[in-house]
Amino acid sequence: MSATTVSASPKSTSATPVRRITSADADAALREGWADFMDMRGDLIFVGLIYVLVGVVAATAVMGGALLPLLFPIIAGVGLMGPVAALGFYEMARRRESGLHSNWQHFLDVRKRPGADEIAIVGALLLGIFVAWVFVASGLYIALFGWWEPPSIGAFLSRVFTTPEGWALILIGNAIGLGFAALVLGLSVVSLPMLVDCDISAAEAVSTSWRAARANPGVMFRWGVTVAALLVIGSIPLFVGLAAVLPWLGYATWHLYTKLVDRSAIKSRRD
Image 1 (spheres, one colour):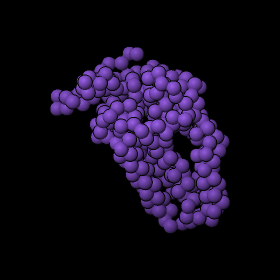
Image 2 (cartoon, one colour):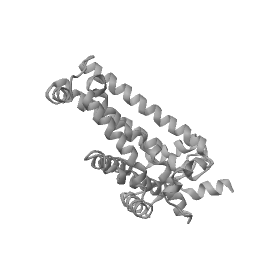
Image 3 (cartoon, helix red, strand yellow):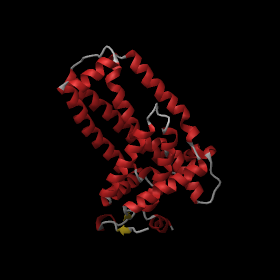
Image 4 (cartoon, one colour):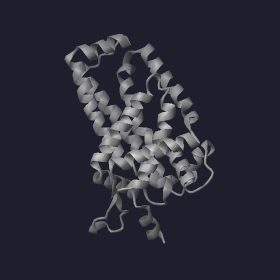
């Protein structure tokens, strides 16, 4: 692995060192994540979630009205909570790395980890970001469309794709969504796997994640695009592909974390 360690700044010598990695390292994390998926699977865990998503989409499409404009922001925003949904896969990957027996029965064992309370804090932070995204998306819709309640999904899509305010909603909304996604990526790409792995504070985990992302802007941008592309592909048709994509990305994120963070420094600091 062609990675170089980035030392902590003099003002924070106790901070966990992070590494600069390359695109080859990110590709290796995806390959290793796929190997974990083939060995431990995990797709059945998400079958129930996928049926819920399909039900929500179908119900909203049929009912229309006030809920319809929130359909896309909520579905897109589910990705903001993806790192929380992947916690069980981080635990399974950790167990496999440690040589422990690991399968889907260990998915919920993450609640037994020493950092479970700190994990909950980061999860609450991500939930707050998700709620903020939905409020911002709602505000943008009202600013452009007023309080208009579409009578049907056809009428809604027609106005979105054939009017200036509709294209403004698409362009501005996606730009804002990209900002939220980048924020979540920076805060969570390392923090949640690190909390599953180590007994540290949520503040330290989030700080380490943010520094790792800042040390690798190009790789993180490419990683974010890859994740978004896989989620879109997995959502077509009817979210069925997410049963494989979500576990794969969960395992892959664990391996990305192990490449981004100097875990030996954490151990030596505890000794």
